[in-house]
Length: 332
Ligand code: ATP
Ligand code: MG
Ligand code: FE
Image (tube, rainbow, N blue to C red; front, side, top):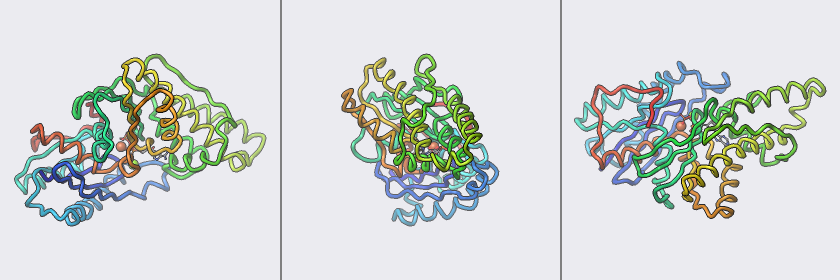
């Protein structure tokens, strides 16, 4: 089984080829046009996907050593994501599958973030709980099987990645700021400043409060000392990151206890965060968890995870028709 997979949900144009469940490559073109705007501009993202898609797919096919006539299916991200961005990948996938006379496989991007865990060893055993943390989502997912998962908790407002990026923006750091906060936090004191820990009922999260708290905190301090940010950058980053991780871990611990599950995984772009990775390993030894942390390259958006999900769908004969449309708010 050889599958070509395409990811175009946000600002990464990516293609990968998977052969009998083994990822052969993972070509990613990151769009730099958004940097100067401090966030992804949807219209520009769609145009950049149009430019990058064919060269990226061409490279994926060439370096896989598999001829396009040997492909068994074409897979693509159907959603969730930016409508215009998704449209580019979906349209290409349809045309290509039609031209080659092979089936199409639609993939849910959030499910794929989780299935990235099955690309390499060690692979989690079912059932496991996955904390999916990315630019647009923050979810606790109960994973019963490859394609059988349900959301047991999620954010009621901002995603945690958004909280990282918006904090970074307030600090004057370029987009996406999450990785920069991580870098500065390593050299800062996490107890230098206190931010409120929001704890709403159940397994849901709320990250809009901390954004406002950081805004007022900076405004008040800048009034007295105009260089407050430069002088305290590392400590501010460390303190905000500490608070965000604390809020994530609070609900993760609660979920593990409630569902009596000790196989714990993280996924999505924010799972690249070194503070989160470290905290998770500490909790693993404390609570007897088996934790699963994906390789960096499979944390942020990539087509290898789409290919992995597509492989499982192919095995079940789960294909879609040429009338399929993208879904900006696709659920599991
Ligand atoms: P979604 O998957 O919800 O549709 P997305 O595809 O934009 O959203 P990802 O590519 O999975 O999200 O993740 C991007 C997010 O991850 C950004 O918010 C970015 O700041 C954050 N991120 C990446 N690396 C780190 C890091 N080391 N520390 C904190 N945040 C990080
Ligand atoms: Mg991205
Ligand atoms: Fe993503």
